[in-house]
Image (cartoon, rainbow, N blue to C red):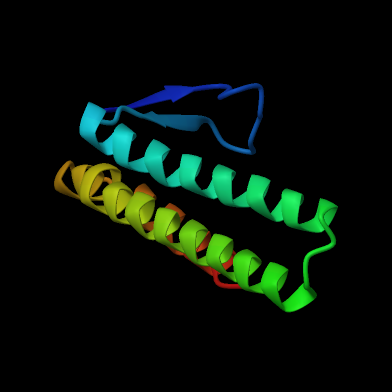
Amino acid sequence: MEAKETKQITGMETEEACCRTERTPAEQKKLLIRLKTVEGQIRGIQKMVEADAYCPDILMQVSAVSNALNSFNKLLLASHIRGCVSDDIREGRDGKVDELCTMLQKLMK
């Protein structure tokens, strides 16, 4: 995986220059399938609310969405560690390790 520095990604600026991760078509497909699944689940929840579905039923679906997003995060994080982080470590740069630690602290709040 090759990381390229840019100033902006999708119109969002950050404190530091952003990196861009080039994913294989297979990696991208796995991630997009998971996101489309979540998107469908969210639409289902919207329909349940519109139909005045029973609260516990809606809560169970929200829990399923949360689990699906956690699965997405795990897949993306593993890819990031195997690619971006390990590439930088091999090249003698430890900035990505610091970035990973900071990111994990934010994710685990």
